[in-house]
Length: 258
Image 1: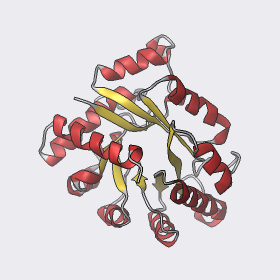
Image 2: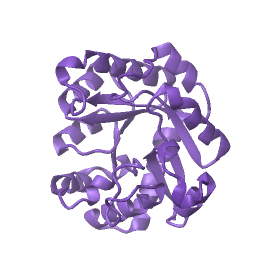
Image 3: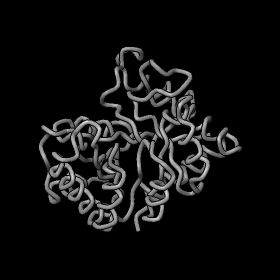
């Protein structure tokens, strides 16, 4: 069985439990059948750290982008994003999107402009976009539609079915994190039941959002297994089935070039 963590921040995970070793952390993940990892960039100041991980480890892929809450980070132009993405180790643009939870909507025009630039870089490069949205679902979908966003994933999805359906209609994938294992995530589990199997992804977003049964402790890519297990339970299939389809979906979205 092979599971892929489609969104994690390996450069930000504490390696203390693994003796300070990235290799040990990856070996720990493999004990849970988690064998490949997309390490997602959130600012350009640390982009080289993310890229270096992908260059040093064959099982790690990387992205380039600036997170919507990274307000004080250097803001890239479309051309700069394209230049940085012109590398076989970079398989995605982002994460990008809108976040009105941390930053007030009325003071977020710069956020929307940044999102649009990432969409354009994704469309031009042909590399899929990783979308973060929090308390901004209507504007997120509106901008994606208006700017003709071509492909990508709604990462760490926590919205309603209406939002999921709108993203699916645009050709996007839906990725579930540890949130789907939380007792309070009743509506989200209904969404996880409805998403077509060929558009489904799983992720940890580690070191954040640790799933049950380790909620409250630091997250690690190994725990993608528990998200696969919960999705399998929700959909009435085996963990092997979820591992297989999400691996196929990851390959189709991020590794195939049309």
